Image 1 (cartoon, helix red, strand yellow):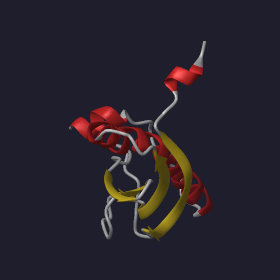
Image 2 (cartoon, helix red, strand yellow; image 1 turned 180 degrees about the vertical axis):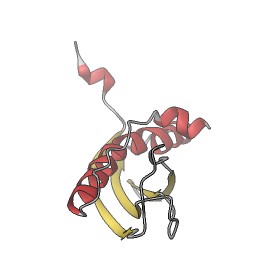
Image 3 (spheres, one colour; image 1 turned 30 degrees about the vertical axis):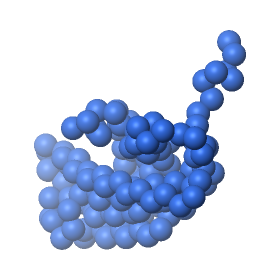
Length: 136
């Protein structure tokens, strides 16, 4: 199998956590029904020359809501290099689907680590179909 024909027109360079807030709900009492997972994901994009900055803000549960064990919000930023001759349509596709798909495993790992270290039951976010998420 020759992978040269499948090479992407974007390259993932790095990511960082821009901000993060974790608030434990000390009044939380788990019910027999379990905890409904409430996630809100908001992407953002900025292009500078050959760099594409993709930010993803994740809000997990609701702040000051006694139905949830904690509130977590975090924002990560990924830096991608894009080829100069990429079409606008391809760039849109890359930034809305591929870049988010590349960054989401880092978000999942962060949530698992943060919750485990915060002495709340560790939360492992389910894998997401980014294409379906974007199209909805």
